[in-house]
Image 1 (cartoon, rainbow, N blue to C red):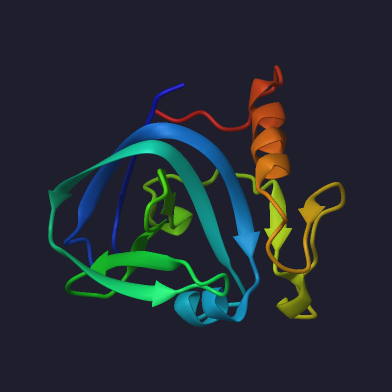
Image 2 (tube, one colour):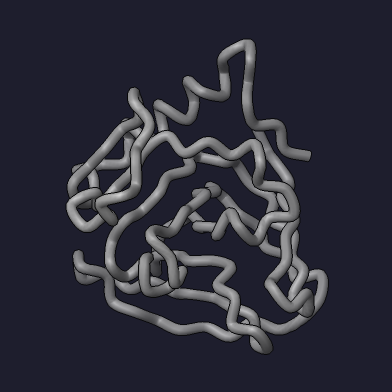
Amino acid sequence: MLESLEGQCQCGKVHYRVQGVCATVFVCHCLECQRQSASAFGMALWVNDAKVLLLSGELNQWLRATPSGQQMLCRFCHTCGTRLFHQIKGQNQLSIKPGTLNDSRQLKPVAHIWTSSKQDWVKIPENTLQYPENPPTFDALFMAWEAQHSAPDRSLILA
């Protein structure tokens, strides 16, 4: 289902709208996400066939290597530096940083990855997929997201 998501950076100069198909939401405990978020973990909302529309502001970008040797394009606010999007070069999925959405209260992660480097005090809910590093494929995360959102009590409704 095509969905529309809106969000902004911390200073409010960048406002965006993304249209696409939400594929999954997960928590990453890798050291890169801890550094990038200046917190115990980062979150990712993957959107397939994403169309990004900047409603205001400018984005800068930075290209970094991933542990698998791929290149990740990181886009952030030109003014305050808030990270908004990640995308592996050559892939069709856009990763939105969910904390930048105007309303993220209904997002429930289906998995935690890189748990081998998670902070000891972080408690992962039971019945949540867990991987010590990257999962071999993300298929189980996509299926868990689909199952979570095809249930009658669908917990995520996006405008």
